[in-house]
Length: 352
Image (cartoon, rainbow, N blue to C red; front, side, top):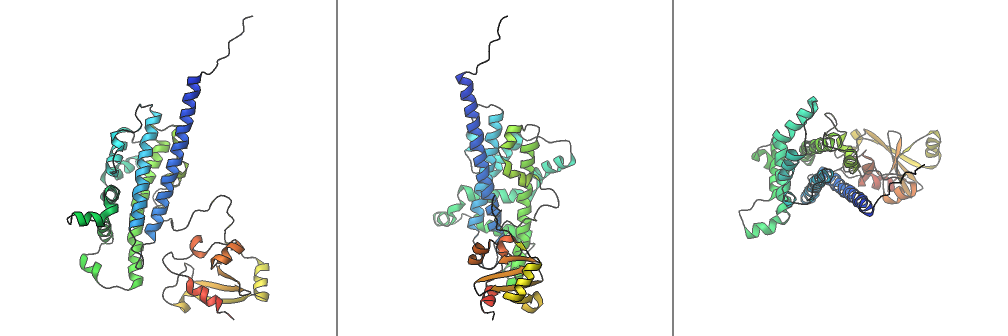
Protein backbone atom coordinates (compact mmCIF):
# COMPACT_ATOMS: atom_id res chain seq x y z
CA UNK A 1 0.00 0.00 0.00
CA UNK A 2 1.35 3.35 -1.05
CA UNK A 3 2.12 5.74 1.80
CA UNK A 4 0.79 9.27 1.64
CA UNK A 5 3.41 11.96 1.47
CA UNK A 6 3.42 14.35 4.36
CA UNK A 7 2.94 17.99 3.44
CA UNK A 8 6.03 19.81 4.49
CA UNK A 9 6.04 23.53 5.02
CA UNK A 10 8.67 25.24 2.90
CA UNK A 11 11.05 27.98 4.00
CA UNK A 12 9.03 30.59 2.09
CA UNK A 13 5.85 29.58 3.97
CA UNK A 14 7.62 29.80 7.30
CA UNK A 15 9.04 33.17 6.29
CA UNK A 16 5.56 34.50 5.44
CA UNK A 17 4.17 33.24 8.75
CA UNK A 18 7.05 34.81 10.65
CA UNK A 19 6.52 38.10 8.84
CA UNK A 20 2.80 37.98 9.58
CA UNK A 21 3.37 37.33 13.30
CA UNK A 22 5.90 40.16 13.44
CA UNK A 23 3.40 42.52 11.77
CA UNK A 24 0.65 41.60 14.23
CA UNK A 25 2.90 42.07 17.27
CA UNK A 26 4.20 45.41 15.98
CA UNK A 27 0.67 46.63 15.22
CA UNK A 28 -0.58 45.61 18.64
CA UNK A 29 2.29 47.54 20.26
CA UNK A 30 1.47 50.62 18.17
CA UNK A 31 -2.24 50.45 19.02
CA UNK A 32 -1.33 50.04 22.67
CA UNK A 33 0.86 53.14 22.50
CA UNK A 34 -1.87 55.19 20.81
CA UNK A 35 -4.42 54.05 23.41
CA UNK A 36 -2.16 55.15 26.27
CA UNK A 37 -1.54 58.52 24.60
CA UNK A 38 -5.26 59.03 24.13
CA UNK A 39 -6.24 58.04 27.64
CA UNK A 40 -3.52 60.22 29.17
CA UNK A 41 -4.47 63.08 26.85
CA UNK A 42 -8.13 62.93 27.90
CA UNK A 43 -7.03 62.86 31.53
CA UNK A 44 -4.80 65.93 31.09
CA UNK A 45 -7.69 67.69 29.36
CA UNK A 46 -9.91 67.00 32.39
CA UNK A 47 -7.28 68.65 34.61
CA UNK A 48 -7.60 72.03 32.85
CA UNK A 49 -9.08 74.55 35.27
CA UNK A 50 -8.61 78.02 36.74
CA UNK A 51 -5.15 77.13 38.11
CA UNK A 52 -4.01 74.95 35.19
CA UNK A 53 -4.05 76.30 31.63
CA UNK A 54 -1.33 73.98 30.27
CA UNK A 55 -3.19 73.06 27.05
CA UNK A 56 0.03 72.10 25.30
CA UNK A 57 0.23 68.68 26.99
CA UNK A 58 -3.33 67.38 26.28
CA UNK A 59 -3.20 68.68 22.69
CA UNK A 60 0.20 67.04 22.14
CA UNK A 61 -0.99 63.70 23.53
CA UNK A 62 -4.33 63.72 21.70
CA UNK A 63 -2.91 64.78 18.33
CA UNK A 64 -0.21 62.10 18.59
CA UNK A 65 -2.63 59.47 19.85
CA UNK A 66 -5.28 59.97 17.14
CA UNK A 67 -2.69 60.22 14.35
CA UNK A 68 -0.98 56.99 15.43
CA UNK A 69 -4.37 55.30 15.81
CA UNK A 70 -5.51 56.24 12.28
CA UNK A 71 -2.19 55.33 10.62
CA UNK A 72 -2.08 51.96 12.40
CA UNK A 73 -5.73 51.49 11.42
CA UNK A 74 -4.90 52.03 7.73
CA UNK A 75 -1.79 49.83 7.77
CA UNK A 76 -3.74 47.01 9.45
CA UNK A 77 -6.32 47.03 6.66
CA UNK A 78 -3.53 47.12 4.06
CA UNK A 79 -2.02 43.99 5.64
CA UNK A 80 -5.38 42.20 5.67
CA UNK A 81 -5.98 43.14 2.02
CA UNK A 82 -2.43 42.01 1.11
CA UNK A 83 -1.60 45.38 -0.44
CA UNK A 84 1.96 45.79 -1.66
CA UNK A 85 2.75 49.17 -0.10
CA UNK A 86 2.01 49.49 3.60
CA UNK A 87 3.28 53.05 3.88
CA UNK A 88 2.34 55.25 0.94
CA UNK A 89 1.69 58.94 0.28
CA UNK A 90 -1.61 58.97 2.18
CA UNK A 91 0.31 58.31 5.40
CA UNK A 92 2.82 61.14 4.85
CA UNK A 93 0.54 63.65 6.53
CA UNK A 94 -0.34 65.02 9.94
CA UNK A 95 -3.86 65.88 8.78
CA UNK A 96 -6.34 63.83 10.76
CA UNK A 97 -9.10 64.92 8.37
CA UNK A 98 -7.19 63.49 5.39
CA UNK A 99 -6.55 60.24 7.26
CA UNK A 100 -10.16 59.76 8.30
CA UNK A 101 -11.27 60.58 4.74
CA UNK A 102 -8.97 57.85 3.42
CA UNK A 103 -10.33 55.36 5.98
CA UNK A 104 -13.94 56.12 5.03
CA UNK A 105 -13.26 55.89 1.30
CA UNK A 106 -11.30 52.64 1.40
CA UNK A 107 -12.16 50.61 4.49
CA UNK A 108 -15.36 51.90 6.08
CA UNK A 109 -18.65 50.10 5.49
CA UNK A 110 -22.12 51.18 6.62
CA UNK A 111 -24.07 48.36 8.26
CA UNK A 112 -27.87 47.89 8.20
CA UNK A 113 -28.53 48.88 11.83
CA UNK A 114 -29.80 52.30 12.85
CA UNK A 115 -26.67 52.85 14.92
CA UNK A 116 -24.47 52.19 11.86
CA UNK A 117 -26.30 54.87 9.90
CA UNK A 118 -26.07 57.32 12.82
CA UNK A 119 -22.35 56.59 13.18
CA UNK A 120 -21.75 57.42 9.52
CA UNK A 121 -23.79 60.63 9.81
CA UNK A 122 -21.75 61.62 12.85
CA UNK A 123 -18.44 61.14 11.04
CA UNK A 124 -19.57 63.09 7.99
CA UNK A 125 -21.73 65.84 9.50
CA UNK A 126 -20.73 66.65 13.09
CA UNK A 127 -19.24 70.15 13.05
CA UNK A 128 -17.66 69.84 16.49
CA UNK A 129 -15.80 66.68 15.49
CA UNK A 130 -14.47 68.45 12.40
CA UNK A 131 -13.32 71.41 14.53
CA UNK A 132 -11.56 69.18 17.07
CA UNK A 133 -9.77 67.18 14.35
CA UNK A 134 -8.81 70.37 12.49
CA UNK A 135 -7.25 71.96 15.59
CA UNK A 136 -5.40 68.76 16.53
CA UNK A 137 -4.18 68.44 12.92
CA UNK A 138 -2.84 72.01 12.97
CA UNK A 139 -1.15 71.28 16.27
CA UNK A 140 0.44 68.11 14.87
CA UNK A 141 1.67 69.86 11.71
CA UNK A 142 3.22 73.02 13.12
CA UNK A 143 1.31 74.13 16.23
CA UNK A 144 3.83 72.49 18.56
CA UNK A 145 6.06 75.48 17.80
CA UNK A 146 3.30 78.07 17.68
CA UNK A 147 5.30 80.75 19.53
CA UNK A 148 8.27 80.37 17.17
CA UNK A 149 5.89 80.31 14.20
CA UNK A 150 4.33 83.53 15.43
CA UNK A 151 7.75 85.17 15.63
CA UNK A 152 8.42 84.18 12.02
CA UNK A 153 4.90 84.97 10.83
CA UNK A 154 2.80 87.26 13.08
CA UNK A 155 -0.31 86.26 11.10
CA UNK A 156 -0.09 82.63 12.21
CA UNK A 157 -2.81 81.46 14.60
CA UNK A 158 -2.08 79.35 17.67
CA UNK A 159 -4.03 76.04 17.83
CA UNK A 160 -4.35 76.64 21.57
CA UNK A 161 -6.18 79.91 20.94
CA UNK A 162 -8.42 78.05 18.49
CA UNK A 163 -9.05 75.41 21.16
CA UNK A 164 -10.07 78.09 23.68
CA UNK A 165 -12.36 79.58 21.03
CA UNK A 166 -13.96 76.14 20.60
CA UNK A 167 -14.46 75.97 24.37
CA UNK A 168 -16.28 79.30 24.33
CA UNK A 169 -18.51 78.06 21.51
CA UNK A 170 -19.36 74.85 23.37
CA UNK A 171 -19.81 76.79 26.61
CA UNK A 172 -22.07 79.23 24.74
CA UNK A 173 -20.13 82.24 26.08
CA UNK A 174 -19.69 85.51 24.22
CA UNK A 175 -16.28 87.19 24.30
CA UNK A 176 -17.67 89.73 26.75
CA UNK A 177 -18.88 86.99 29.09
CA UNK A 178 -15.59 85.08 28.69
CA UNK A 179 -13.47 88.00 29.90
CA UNK A 180 -15.85 89.05 32.67
CA UNK A 181 -14.31 88.42 36.14
CA UNK A 182 -15.68 85.26 37.78
CA UNK A 183 -15.34 83.29 40.99
CA UNK A 184 -12.86 80.41 40.89
CA UNK A 185 -15.59 77.85 41.58
CA UNK A 186 -17.67 79.21 38.70
CA UNK A 187 -14.71 79.07 36.31
CA UNK A 188 -13.92 75.46 37.26
CA UNK A 189 -17.53 74.41 36.72
CA UNK A 190 -17.36 76.01 33.30
CA UNK A 191 -14.19 74.04 32.43
CA UNK A 192 -15.82 70.81 33.62
CA UNK A 193 -18.82 71.43 31.38
CA UNK A 194 -16.95 72.27 28.17
CA UNK A 195 -14.29 69.60 28.71
CA UNK A 196 -17.02 66.99 29.08
CA UNK A 197 -18.55 68.08 25.74
CA UNK A 198 -15.19 67.84 23.95
CA UNK A 199 -14.43 64.45 25.48
CA UNK A 200 -17.83 63.15 24.33
CA UNK A 201 -16.94 64.22 20.77
CA UNK A 202 -13.61 62.36 20.91
CA UNK A 203 -15.01 59.28 22.66
CA UNK A 204 -17.78 58.88 20.11
CA UNK A 205 -15.32 59.26 17.24
CA UNK A 206 -13.06 56.55 18.71
CA UNK A 207 -15.96 54.24 19.54
CA UNK A 208 -17.30 54.41 15.96
CA UNK A 209 -13.95 53.52 14.41
CA UNK A 210 -13.23 50.84 17.01
CA UNK A 211 -16.57 49.13 16.31
CA UNK A 212 -15.89 49.30 12.59
CA UNK A 213 -12.40 47.86 13.00
CA UNK A 214 -13.54 45.00 15.21
CA UNK A 215 -16.99 44.22 13.74
CA UNK A 216 -17.12 45.88 10.31
CA UNK A 217 -17.68 43.86 7.12
CA UNK A 218 -14.06 44.32 6.06
CA UNK A 219 -12.73 43.31 9.46
CA UNK A 220 -11.21 39.93 10.22
CA UNK A 221 -10.47 38.04 13.42
CA UNK A 222 -6.72 38.62 13.32
CA UNK A 223 -7.16 42.29 12.49
CA UNK A 224 -9.48 42.85 15.46
CA UNK A 225 -7.07 41.03 17.76
CA UNK A 226 -4.36 43.66 17.26
CA UNK A 227 -6.21 46.37 19.18
CA UNK A 228 -7.71 44.79 22.33
CA UNK A 229 -7.36 48.01 24.35
CA UNK A 230 -9.76 49.82 22.03
CA UNK A 231 -12.59 47.53 23.12
CA UNK A 232 -12.78 50.13 25.93
CA UNK A 233 -14.12 52.63 23.37
CA UNK A 234 -15.88 50.02 21.23
CA UNK A 235 -18.22 49.21 24.13
CA UNK A 236 -19.35 52.85 24.49
CA UNK A 237 -22.81 53.85 23.28
CA UNK A 238 -25.25 56.67 24.01
CA UNK A 239 -25.39 57.16 27.76
CA UNK A 240 -21.78 56.00 28.22
CA UNK A 241 -20.03 58.99 26.71
CA UNK A 242 -18.60 61.58 29.08
CA UNK A 243 -18.84 59.35 32.15
CA UNK A 244 -15.18 58.26 32.51
CA UNK A 245 -12.75 60.03 34.83
CA UNK A 246 -9.50 59.74 32.85
CA UNK A 247 -7.48 61.40 35.61
CA UNK A 248 -7.60 58.06 37.43
CA UNK A 249 -4.79 55.77 36.34
CA UNK A 250 -6.17 52.39 35.20
CA UNK A 251 -5.39 49.63 37.66
CA UNK A 252 -2.46 47.51 36.51
CA UNK A 253 -2.66 43.74 36.54
CA UNK A 254 -1.62 42.42 39.96
CA UNK A 255 -2.03 45.74 41.75
CA UNK A 256 -3.54 45.48 45.23
CA UNK A 257 -3.96 49.22 45.71
CA UNK A 258 -7.71 49.11 46.20
CA UNK A 259 -9.87 50.80 48.86
CA UNK A 260 -10.46 48.69 51.96
CA UNK A 261 -14.08 48.04 52.92
CA UNK A 262 -14.40 48.47 56.66
CA UNK A 263 -15.71 45.63 58.83
CA UNK A 264 -16.72 45.43 62.47
CA UNK A 265 -13.15 44.74 63.59
CA UNK A 266 -11.93 47.89 61.80
CA UNK A 267 -14.55 50.01 63.54
CA UNK A 268 -13.58 48.49 66.89
CA UNK A 269 -9.89 49.24 66.31
CA UNK A 270 -10.74 52.81 65.39
CA UNK A 271 -12.74 53.21 68.60
CA UNK A 272 -10.00 51.76 70.81
CA UNK A 273 -6.71 52.78 69.22
CA UNK A 274 -7.03 55.59 66.68
CA UNK A 275 -8.09 59.22 66.57
CA UNK A 276 -10.94 60.29 64.33
CA UNK A 277 -12.71 63.40 63.15
CA UNK A 278 -15.91 63.54 61.09
CA UNK A 279 -16.34 66.44 58.64
CA UNK A 280 -19.25 67.34 56.36
CA UNK A 281 -19.44 69.53 53.27
CA UNK A 282 -21.71 71.93 55.20
CA UNK A 283 -19.14 72.31 58.00
CA UNK A 284 -16.19 72.70 55.65
CA UNK A 285 -17.72 75.21 53.24
CA UNK A 286 -16.32 76.16 49.84
CA UNK A 287 -13.78 74.04 47.94
CA UNK A 288 -15.03 70.76 49.43
CA UNK A 289 -12.92 68.27 47.45
CA UNK A 290 -14.92 65.05 47.82
CA UNK A 291 -17.88 63.64 45.92
CA UNK A 292 -19.40 62.34 49.17
CA UNK A 293 -21.17 64.72 51.59
CA UNK A 294 -19.25 63.52 54.67
CA UNK A 295 -15.86 61.95 55.39
CA UNK A 296 -14.06 60.63 58.47
CA UNK A 297 -10.40 61.43 59.08
CA UNK A 298 -8.38 58.86 60.99
CA UNK A 299 -4.85 59.19 62.40
CA UNK A 300 -3.12 55.93 63.23
CA UNK A 301 -0.48 56.59 65.88
CA UNK A 302 0.41 59.90 64.21
CA UNK A 303 2.15 58.04 61.36
CA UNK A 304 -0.49 56.86 58.94
CA UNK A 305 -3.33 59.07 57.73
CA UNK A 306 -6.56 57.50 56.54
CA UNK A 307 -9.75 59.01 55.16
CA UNK A 308 -12.96 56.97 55.33
CA UNK A 309 -15.54 57.63 52.61
CA UNK A 310 -18.83 55.72 52.48
CA UNK A 311 -17.37 52.81 54.44
CA UNK A 312 -14.11 52.52 52.49
CA UNK A 313 -10.59 53.49 53.57
CA UNK A 314 -8.23 55.58 51.42
CA UNK A 315 -4.75 57.00 52.05
CA UNK A 316 -4.16 60.74 52.31
CA UNK A 317 -0.42 60.65 51.62
CA UNK A 318 2.15 58.56 49.76
CA UNK A 319 3.69 56.95 52.85
CA UNK A 320 0.29 55.66 54.01
CA UNK A 321 -0.60 54.53 50.49
CA UNK A 322 2.53 52.41 50.08
CA UNK A 323 2.46 51.03 53.64
CA UNK A 324 -1.26 50.23 53.77
CA UNK A 325 -1.62 49.35 50.04
CA UNK A 326 -4.42 51.88 49.68
CA UNK A 327 -5.18 54.28 46.80
CA UNK A 328 -5.51 58.01 47.40
CA UNK A 329 -9.00 59.54 46.99
CA UNK A 330 -7.92 61.10 43.68
CA UNK A 331 -6.59 57.83 42.28
CA UNK A 332 -9.77 56.04 43.34
CA UNK A 333 -12.01 58.70 41.79
CA UNK A 334 -13.85 59.69 45.00
CA UNK A 335 -12.31 63.19 45.04
CA UNK A 336 -12.92 66.04 42.61
CA UNK A 337 -9.83 66.08 40.40
CA UNK A 338 -9.12 69.80 40.39
CA UNK A 339 -9.52 70.32 44.15
CA UNK A 340 -6.75 69.76 46.68
CA UNK A 341 -7.05 67.42 49.67
CA UNK A 342 -3.90 68.79 51.33
CA UNK A 343 -5.88 70.68 53.96
CA UNK A 344 -7.37 67.41 55.24
CA UNK A 345 -3.89 65.93 55.63
CA UNK A 346 -2.89 68.98 57.66
CA UNK A 347 -5.97 68.55 59.88
CA UNK A 348 -5.06 64.93 60.47
CA UNK A 349 -1.50 65.79 61.45
CA UNK A 350 -2.86 68.35 63.91
CA UNK A 351 -5.40 65.89 65.34
CA UNK A 352 -4.76 65.38 69.07
